[in-house]
Image (cartoon, rainbow, N blue to C red):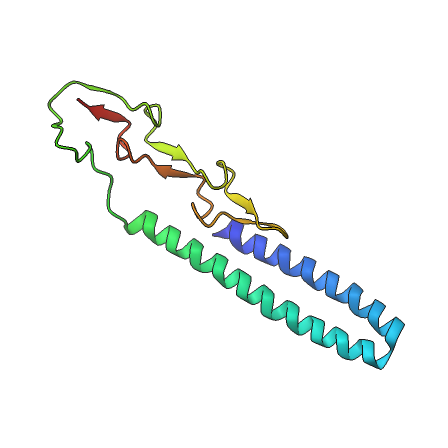
Amino acid sequence: MVKLLWAIVKDGLKAFAFWLVASVVMIYLWGYTGRMLSMFLGLIFIVSFIGANLKRIVVALQGSSASTGGIPPVPFPVQGQSPGQPNTVCTQCGGVGRTTCYGCGGSGYRYDGVQNTTCFICSGQRSFVCTTCSGSGMIYR
């Protein structure tokens, strides 16, 4: 969550610096009209910045609540297999119990066309609980 807040602050400072430079140029070129246009541009930046970052915060909060209060992983697959039989290492995750996020390739961030944002698929956690072994790393045969 701290990384997300730092990313939001950093993005806000970048947007503010861009708006400041654009405003100075518009006021220099067009005078009073440029001042009105720069205020309109600032309003657009504020609305888009708040909207984009509210989405990032909601996704991060849903991901953190799902990881802390979700259903615990099942120690063996629910495919009618009993845990008393000999088990083997899961081939999907290699016995780790987690698989890399397919959306961001394990980086936790995705490029949305403008900037890198927190991956909305894994919420920046970079991996998922393996669905083949339910996070145990073993398959019961």
